[in-house]
Amino acid sequence: MFSELPEAVAAVITDSQFVEFATLTATGEPLDTPLLGFADPARGTIDMTTGLSYPIKAERARRNPKVGLFFDGTGEAGSPMVSVSALVAVRDADIQTNAERYVRASKSMLPWISFGCSPEEARAAVWYWSRIWLECTPVRVRWWQSLAATDPPPEEWKATPPVSAPVSDPAPKGTMSPAPRWFEADWRARAAAVLAVAPSPHLTLVDGDGFPLPFRTRDAELVDRGFRVDVPRGHPWPALQGPASLAFGILGIFVGTVQPVDERHALFVVDRILPDHPLVANPREIFAPEPATRRALTERLERELARRGQPMPELSPELFG
Image: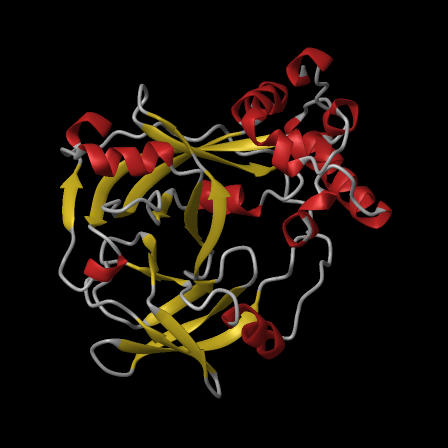
């Protein structure tokens, strides 16, 4: 797939560290979460992970493998913005191997996510390294030359049908463990705060083929029931209408519905804001969480390992050398 794309488009996918990743809830809400991306051109997949101690994205992906990815570009002049419709395979049959793979894949990030903690402290953060891998096989790629050039329709690549994507690992036994009750902000107070630093969020709607696709907006402003959003006309959805999410990076993810205002603007009506995960809200807690956070993550990790009949991963010091 990568060799069939323009070089600049393939470079955005392979070189971008972060990707907007959207899944569908059981009720059809498209939820977008920014994740680290690990493109694998040799296999033709774009891979991401979620923690086994916060597995809800993987549960959604296993139930409905249609997912959407969005890349904002590399930041260099002429770098395109890229949308990917993909089929995802969930990999959680061997958490020990997954953890080791994640340590190796993210080793270059350790200096800026460790906040000065020692290799021994990083190695002990099993709640963070225990991972579910999400391997995405693209079926459609759209791209725009820049945010300033997103009014015209995008160029695109489509996989030759039939598209064969690997199936997910067998679902674990029983019911997913309940999530801890993390902090949930007042959505109006959070909206005012995030708009001050991130005025152009990612809006996610479902396209005509049933894929939840994030897309970068130009601007957003707070109004009575939510946000008035400036959406480029070249967006990938059939209409500015329906269940949606509005993601301001890691600062806040709002869930609601969209309705059109005019050919360029939409009203995003807020239903709720997603709770703040402590490791995202304060990255210093990744390796040094507050005692209550550590306890909650460890307890959920133990429950999810038990569902899979797997032991607690053990990571060798050599992985962090």
